[in-house]
Each structure stands twice: as structure tokens, then as C-alpha cells.
Length: 145
Ligand code: CA2
Image (cartoon, rainbow, N blue to C red; front, side, top):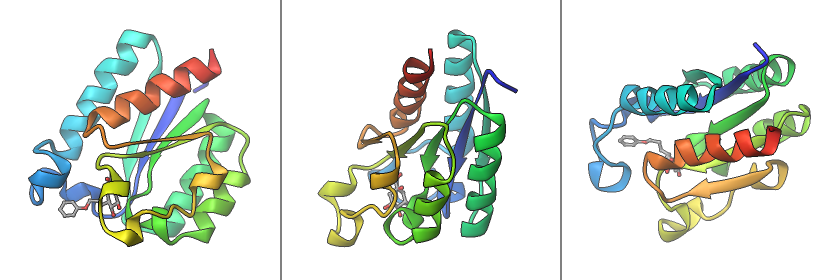
């Protein structure tokens, strides 16, 4: 339990690898989870990797992470740009949350330039493809050691 980081994924990330490989690369979410599991093992930590398409489920998981984990790597998907509820949930927990994105959201459509959750998180990693996940985990491990 308390060597564990949550890796939480929001809407449509279950479709990775099937469409839009030019933006998100060819890996599926299962491939990314496997990369995260190997990285975590190499660092002597464990991860709990999850995906949901539902905003309230992400809120519940953030609360759970606040009770049972050392920190959270969060790819909130499109809820990044819309969700006051996620902003509040991050503020409601005391473990560090790192916002991450596969794509460079600032090089994309205007509506992706603003993050509702960025003011509530410890830091933001974006634009490194699937490697953004292990960079976020590295940041969390460094922060909590
Ligand atoms: O770059 C990221 O990681 C994003 O969080 C991905 C979200 C997007 O809404 C954010 O602005 C940036 C999208 C999740 C995946 O959406 C797909 C859409 C089509 C095909 C495959 C995945």
C-alpha cells in the first residue's frame, strides 16, 4: 500500500493505439501500463494503473489515492480542460499529483491550452509521448523520497 503510486487515466485513453497515432503514437494503454510497471519495478515501487471514462470515478479514485498512496500521476484526458470537480478533488488530498499528457497540448487547438487542474497539481509534464508517464512517475518518486 504505502509504496504505491496511482496512475489514473481519463476519458478515451482506452482508445490509444487504435486511432490518431500521429498525435498519440502507436502504443496502447496496456503497452503504457507495461512500461510503467517495468519502470516502477526498477525503482522499487508499485503502481496501481487505472482508466475510466467517467469524471466522478476519477474524483473517487483521487480521494482513494489520498488515503492509500504516495502520490498520483494523472492523465485526465479532456477533463483536464473542463473539470472544476477534478481541480477540487486534487485540492482535497494531500499527496502530490503530477498532471501529464502524451501530446504537447500547447501546440494543439486553443481549447487544449488551458488546464483546470494545473493550478492544483505539483507540476505538469506534457509532450513526450508515452514517455510522459514514466517521467511523471520519476518526478513523484523524487518528490516523495
Ligand atoms: O495528450 C494527452 O495525453 C491528452 O490528455 C489526451 C486527451 C486529450 O483530450 C487531451 O487534450 C490531451 C485525449 C485522450 C485520447 O483520445 C483519443 C482520441 C482518438 C483516438 C485515440 C485516443
